[in-house]
Amino acid sequence: MSLIEPFNLLGALPGDLTEEVFETLLSRPGIRLERILSMGHVTPEGIWFDQPTDEWVFLLQGSARLRIDGQPDGIVLTAGQGLWLPAHCRHRVEWTDPHKVSIWLALHLDLTG
Image (tube, rainbow, N blue to C red):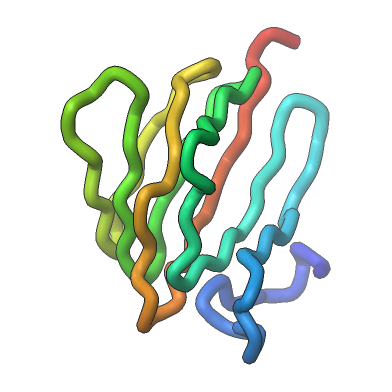
């Protein structure tokens, strides 16, 4: 993808979303921007993400529920909402809409560099 050419973050959706799709849109030292496509996908039971970098997620379309380790309630995100996940904030995806593609924009930042 060329950043000089316009592109549509809500377009070019695959017909088969059997597996969750991760697409890197931009990668530079300390920064990675990706589009994630989910449809009924969840983090497997007992698995937690514990990333060494900060992550900001923004839900462009669809809906999802995330769980932060140690918090009693899940966090529901709908289109237009975002969430900051600092490095080593253990989290998991508990639910994504099984009837509509959830389109995430995730910005991973390594600010230690």
